[in-house]
Length: 431
View 1: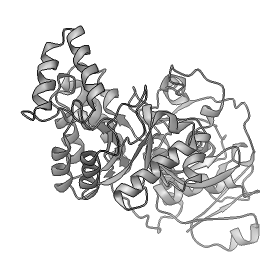
View 2 (view 1 turned 30 degrees about the vertical axis):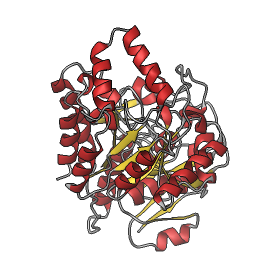
View 3 (view 1 turned 60 degrees about the horizontal axis):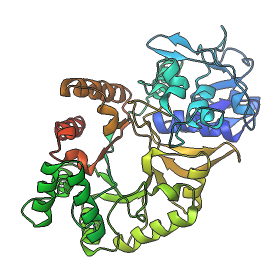
View 4 (view 1 turned 180 degrees about the vertical axis):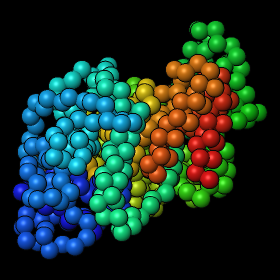
């Protein structure tokens, strides 16, 4: 157990140390403000305050973990060996940067509460982030810092043996539209037919009716392949179905249709199942609750996880709604067009509500790669290379790699050519 001496024990301090010490390093951590308790402790210990007590392991603290609310913070990012660091500590500190304050800044998504430019859907984009501007978005920087702390502790307490965690993967499969042509109802089918004719998409029109007449499998119906892959894996996929009402943004089939219900049930027999919350559920907790209850009625089990449509988050309200509905897992934290680590970590973490200064029961599972983010790389070789680099970064810190693919990503449509092999590459990385 690591004992931390500090002048003030705050919720921010406990939250951050537990993520770094417990979740990443597997190390129990306790805190004290009593010097005599600190001196009496005969195992791992460090002080985290403004001045060292004597010659103990010491990290000079920035003020961030002892503050409340939001302030305009001046951040100076500097090179630190193979990575970057900020909140420099000065000469007497055993670490050149306050990794705890810096980690809290990234984990709490502090910068997303500050004024920033949003995209057309109201999303926080990668270009607005500190990590993108200072080129450390491609690293799980908090996990790297944690291992730097471990190295310093190991040097000082050479007899102590740290536990070692294993690299894991958590594949997420989004299902915003289970079928492309089938089960759309008469009006939508007529509308699609007229659209195909009006735009001279004769090949698609031909394919549409081959599918509707039962001569061909629907291009988005890749669930047989997904279940086969799940059977070959010793870890669970998370499959998230959109079951919200039809709207401008959400165009799935009706969740009351028997075939759709039986599809969800059959997938739930093999995979973990959750909801892809509809676009309007993001703003309206009553819609989200309705969708939650609908899925729970289909699966006869408690809802495990949620991911918001279009990867859109309104902090802190989106997460507060999940907490209120007792939904404990979220898979929305990531960027739609850029690979990397939005929250600076490849380790699931709890949502910290900055307004209320409290750690919540909601676990955020940050994703590091969305299939759409790979589309910007022209060749399959480029896609594979960038994906492999990302996996290597996570493997180097024994973290959890979370990719988000869609059911249609595994179709034979030209746009998604080669994506099955990219998904296989991810699955094989855990062997």
